[in-house]
Image 1 (cartoon, rainbow, N blue to C red):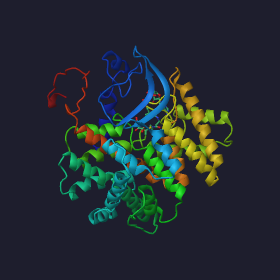
Image 2: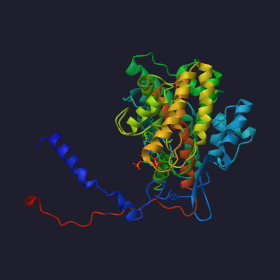
Image 3: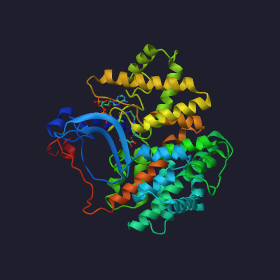
Image 4: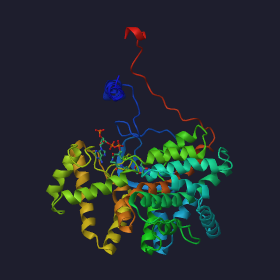
Length: 448
Ligand SMILES: CC(=O)SCCNC(=O)CCNC(=O)[C@H](O)C(C)(C)COP(=O)(O)OP(=O)(O)OC[C@H]1O[C@@H](n2cnc3c(N)ncnc32)[C@H](O)[C@@H]1OP(=O)(O)O
Ligand SMILES: O=C([O-])CC(=O)C(=O)O
């Protein structure tokens, strides 16, 4: 049999073997994803790390949509970010300390922690050599491969004692920016034929500054570095249930090694419904800038967005990227903050027209989505809606938008891994799948 035909035939059979009636989920009371049909959550774990609030629940369990709130270790995100803005301080390292340990550091602890991270930013020379040799143009994939390789260079990779987990976590947080910057520079050299620069991370720079330095030498401003620092803080953690963190928790619950678990989280975050949406949003934005003749014409934009929802335009998936969230309803507090920051930066960089157009896409995207799906379910812009536009204004290339998300979320992932392996009464995570096919009678090969 022709092998291509065989692949086609097997794939065609999957059309039938994948069929599961939508109604069966209700019939068997399956908890789908994060929410049931009535909007109530599927509770699969308990955590002391992040808290994501999108609803209020009354005494009878009825849910009312609310403005979104996000807490890191009990502190509201805004309370962590505001002092940093006021004092013009870099804060990603402080937030990492908080998320890993549960405590805000004092001055001495913070200085020591920053030094520890800085000391760990350089890569083992074997990792550098391997990145140079790794083929491929997807930086998330290269990042995952480098993380898996770190297992080989770790003298104690399988030890899941708390001390060892903390050491590995700090090393991963420190090394992600270096791996991503090097992987991008090598990609740029091999795919785009540009000069190759491998810059050693500098002492006394924050992670955000060091990343920009490794990416762009000294071609970045203080404002660019502060924006990146805020983006890292804002993306660092989102509770135990977001897909990539849950992936890390699920794999960690088997007591596998840190590198296998984090590589799995990277694979999850890459998906366009999750962290990969930031690249999709910026592509969609450029597409709309070309397709819509008058950036102030609401009607023209609505017609196009509706065509997108009907799978007739853009990538024909039916999605408007950057809109919608599994938990947030009326607003995602991070998108609110990023919208404000994007506005400030757009003024500075002379890109106010584009910013106004992006805001209109947000407003009309939400409206068209709600009309398209009917009902009263609210929707809002999510974290990924404005982040790409900010990266673009900082002068960062699209290929690293999702890797930067990973560079931030590694903090949440490692904090959750440590928690997953250290609470009393922990169990391997193992939900159930109900088989709805039933039993079939076996037919011998020569009778088929
Ligand atoms: C960091 C992050 O991960 S943030 C999320 C980034 N992802 C995106 O921006 C991609 C676009 N958004 C989405 O696909 C979704 O809103 C998600 C994946 C974020 C959340 O998914 P869900 O929790 O299933 O959303 P929800 O329950 O509101 O979906 C209800 C319906 O609206 C649809 N919908 C939700 N958001 C969108 C959207 N942006 N565009 C088109 N349709 C949408 C869903 O596909 C679903 O349709 P269905 O009932 O026909 O299957
Ligand atoms: O929580 C989620 O489902 C998605 C996520 O990671 C985030 O919004 O940061």
